[in-house]
Amino acid sequence: MCNSLLGEDVKEILVKLDTEGSFAGTFGLMNEDLGMLAGALGDLPDDERLFSTKSYCRNNGIKYEFDFCAMKESPHINAVKFILTGVSGKTSTLVANSTGGGMVETVLVNGYPYTGKGDTYVVLVFDKDRKLSFKELATQLAGRLDILEEGASDTDDKGILYWYRTPDDPSKDFLKEVVGDVDFAVMKPVLPVITRRDKKEQLFDTVTDWRRLAEEQGKGLYEVALDYQMAASGWTREQVIDYMKNVRAKMHRQTHAIYDEDVKPLETPYSGYHYKQWSEYIATGKRFSGNAINKAIYYALAATTTIPGVHIVPGPMGTGGGFVYSALCAVKEEFGYSDEDLLKGLFIAAGIGAICYTRTGPTGEVIGCTGECGVCCAMAAAGVAEMAGSTPEQVEAAASLALQTTVGWPCDPIPGGKMQPCLSRVITVVTMAITFAEFARSGRDPVLPFHEVVDVADKIGRGLSGDLLCTSRGGHCAAPTAQQCIQAINEWHRQQ
Image 1 (cartoon, helix red, strand yellow):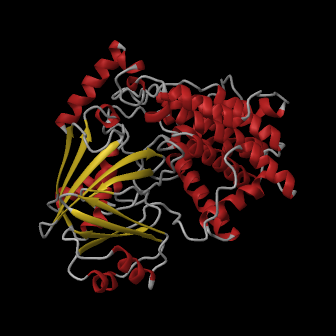
Image 2 (cartoon, one colour; image 1 turned 90 degrees about the vertical axis):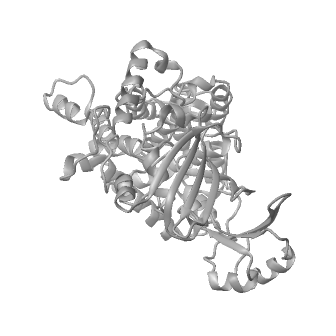
């Protein structure tokens, strides 16, 4: 987004991060540094060059620096400030908050207040000398563009920012005709679904209402989930299904590439990959758990690997989509469900995730690991239940039972700790999702509807100490051995 503000090739990248924020404790642990640099260069999250970003910068004379300092522009624990300098000497700045699952919220653009989430094009007109008329600008732009929303930010020392949100990619020549010599920029969308005028109101924000709509319309949960996506995106039924099939293919590769393809993961002394050991162990035949559980772990361990060229599907945490898919794929293969059954399960999992995003902030920085592993567990449990042909009541029960067991989990990844305790929780997610889907199918009453569990998780999670919200200061990170791990990886980073 900051790259599109600049509008020219980047020469220097400065990324400012809060010394009291989450990145100060976990920086580099989940390739945040690579993602930030790649975005500053104009790459989208699925660009295959992501993992070679630093070498690209070095080879092309692009300077970059990460500066940990007091972040005054935003109180958010995941706030980031980008300052880019182009080849002409022009600069652009963007302050934004990372809100989880690939979502962002802007705070300031070139020093002007502007809140957006990257779901449209945004025409930004920086009227420093107050030459232009807001209404006249809106009228002229509306002649060529579908203006969804408009506004202005008036500052004492920088003049006025006029902004216009549109689903249309505006011609810069047209914009120059409209604004003359006044500076302007177009901020491009980063989300895969662009908001359009025909976007309808959210169909449901609880599974209870989802089930009610299904009953009233004589449909299954899957069909109502399709209606939800069509209403939200303005896409046709076929477009929605095709998009999910594409996502499914990415998740399948995410969970299979390390076993099926001639690929090499990026690996450091601290990666903590365990896929080889698990493969060797289950090959012995001396296993306590059944095949579905073993396979779910097998695929989830594959999803934890970082492989150049293999897309990572988030949901809600960085590799969460792969974990959700691991449980569904394992059950599908073991019990002979069809590709269509699995696709239906993915739509139900997505619906559960959408409800969580509506009612809380499902990230470790907001409500702890409940917002990451916990939500993944609920999504996977509901998806497995749907894939197996469960009733709508059983699908909700599976999600509720799964989430109930994770409420209050802290987010305390140990830098240098070989993915602990995160990997333990991931294994819990993929195995208990299957267990709770079966528990629900047996008729277990969860007592609480799913949305009430989400609300409980939100209240408890927001009450956790900041040391337990992905800052690597508390929880397991405070243990003496964890402190040694942190010191070791910090020293390793300094030597790279």
